[in-house]
Image (spheres, rainbow, N blue to C red):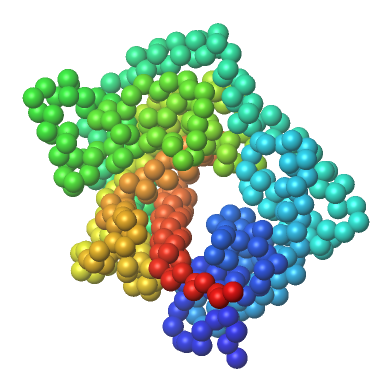
Length: 465
């Protein structure tokens, strides 16, 4: 018999949808791990459900994006069977947040820091009971020790010293002036060979290593530096035409800067996730703020003073990255990004490479399956004052969100000295970013539609006295 939370159909279903439906069937006990609409938080799926319950590396039948009816029922049952430990995890998370506030701890994102610790506590002890407060304090102390002072607050304190700020500003000026000029034309052509092998089982592409050896990522970075109007004279239109990517409607920097040429980075002393500028336009503080906010294992990061010193050179390096394999992955990502077609405007699943076809096929299935996605491209009036139109525009220019998220992910790897050794590892990052952007857009559409639905409901009739 089909699971009660899953439809009885032979069609393949998105794994994310199976997880969502199963989660909603767990009831209110998991509210602390859920969003306003009852769906699991993105971090709940990323940090708890997939790695600790689904465990697709050990259960390859659950690793695919789309599951058959049998696998969907099994996954649904697996999540429902984990309901008790998930409810206990939610209770531990609530307790840890309460204890954290009592102790005056403000560093880091509680979900990133405590979700997996709470699951461990729930697995070992069940729901919080006698001695739970002491256990919570112990976990909080362990997390604080593990971060080793690698916090946003420590970064803010480090950069508050005026003499240190002046020295760093002088170092940034010297590093920016000393950048290497472009010595050859940036060429994105070889990227297609790598992307054509991506996603094909057993395919090997020596082109990735060749691109790294030839410094294709560095060439792109230097080309972006040297394309200032003063360098091209009256032919600034050549820069605007964006021949680099084979498209005239996208900027060569693909939205990684709001300027024609990336500006010299400053030191900075504050940041907000809601107002972060484009990656190439960020200060040292903003670059490291993102790293410290999103890192789940800060003990593996350099100390704050070392992070700052390294970021001076990195921020003035080609594409804002030190490692050439990561720079080459920016080239690959750019080539993939300009061929993304979530709306299927090409009439079918198109793209110059296998990677394009894989990502576009997945995204276009998403567009055809979810009613919310279809509404974003409706030609009718936008009843919410522009939110749906803005979401539709995101689908028309998907390269912008894709490249921004890709750069952030590669920057995090660069900070941790985590190079990409081959095409397969690069594809894992490229594909992961595509999935992340797609799921984020889906969540935003659902939120907009939920808001529209709530606003359109008629007000309740006043009751007579």
